[in-house]
Image (cartoon, rainbow, N blue to C red; front, side, top):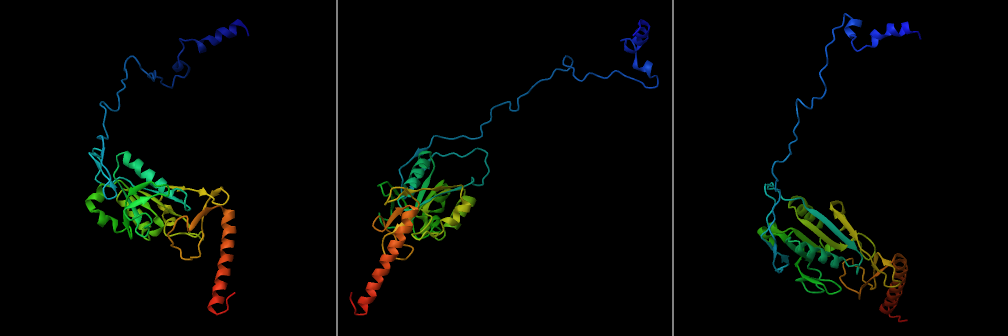
Length: 292
């Protein structure tokens, strides 16, 4: 490229050249700067000028349990909260006999009480193995309780004022309560209570027992416990009845039931059914006057 060509291009690239000179019909103004840090300083302000205390709690004073309730004094709820009750919860503990369901329930209850929450425990009055006024585990753990024929009578017997102050309700041997679903739904959804349910999920024939499985759709959590097979020591998921009774509700302990694994449940049921058939056949012969 010659020097004359370069000199002719300078007006197009020179800093003194103007766009309006090149295109005289289009007016051009100088655009304002996008940022002007010196002329308009910005200031950052905090969202909250002062700390806000949403909750204020006083140190709880826990008294000894009376009539199956652990009371808590000096309890202060959230300041400025609405008058509606807090959201409730439903927690379900299931498993076979001797899996530690009641022990797990009572430990949860004691933990809730230690945290300053007011707690009551309910069991069916059908279970009289260790008395009516207490829940006792197989390993000797014991807490006072309310023994009732149904759950719908609890609020009336406990008293409306005392019920309103309750935070947690424990239910043991829940398979014996026909109104379990309605009680848990109302107590958690409407009254804002935390409900901890313990019970058998299946009977000795591995069929649904009572209403325990009906509350699974309501539950925040479900804990399935296992025991040790009494025959081989493996994990036991089922309960084998050792006696000849056939009714579903037969309250008993190790003299009537034992936890077993799947293999020994199947073989055990076969052996029990065979023995039952032999015994019934023998009884029929005796009644007919033809002893063996």
